[in-house]
Figure 1 (cartoon, rainbow, N blue to C red):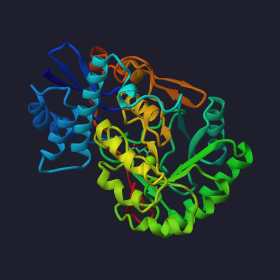
Figure 2 (cartoon, helix red, strand yellow):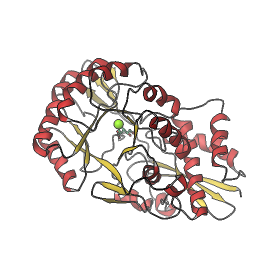
Figure 3 (tube, rainbow, N blue to C red):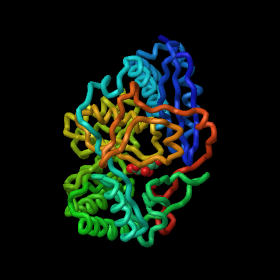
Length: 402
Ligand code: CS2
Ligand code: MG
């Protein structure tokens, strides 16, 4: 069996997606996601210039060997661009293998470990009242787990506050827009928000919060401690993960569960945090961390330390990643939760898929493969439109982590 062509499809139904479609000499094709928010064309170029010429003519059944070829075979390893390109190939090849086997992907991975996959939605508002209303809407939709971000008085465009109801997309400008940050104000406001939410909705729902890399280790420890009475499912990215030693300090001071990893690309980024038991959930995802082949290794390693999965699932990950992640989540023994930001109806139309939502859970379908396709004609109607993620500055103008 041979790979006969590999085509890149870029489409922008409100936000950009990069999709790889691999064709074989047996008429079976597979689809992979290669989207990197705000840097889409860098991955396109890596695929076009370096990856596709190498894989043409290879046997698509040799998923592991092709993964090793693209990873080990490249002297310049790792990083978000390279690993997304590898993920796109890997997912397309798993799609092909599962289609050839006539099985939904989770069956090839080892079969079902659960009936359905608990997901969390994103509720946000500009201040308390609006945020409480937003959480109420998710409760009404049947969600069991809700991530809550709130605007903070005095902070310009705080992270996570959307413009519409269910859809949140921060990449919105040709050049990065400038948002604000003030740790003091956030530390005063965020715990009060969770107090209000527990008063209003009780403790039957899982609540989550994303620090989005903003706090120093000491501030993160303080936030975790202040949030303890509200029993969060997790506090995510409480401090930047470049210096992983920092998590020791956070961990020593709080029992609030910690989640990290949406920007991690390989097991090497995850290893120390997992091995030293500094986190509870690993957020590495299919498209970010080298596809099914590599994410499976991360999850298995995490299982040794009772660390569970919590795959990133923002809208900059296309339905192809969501569909594949749901097969992964259906199989992975140490599953924790899956992030689920709904795609717009235009996006859902371009990527026909067989996963479905019910009572706060997603179910993958039974179609052979990962169950997500692309309507190329429709995709062509939405040409690429450059959009960047914002940057953040403190009140005095100092650059901060967005
Ligand atoms: C976020 C994302 O989903 C999350 O937890 O941190 O919204 C993140 O900001 C985007 O994926 C960036 O592209
Ligand atoms: Mg996050």
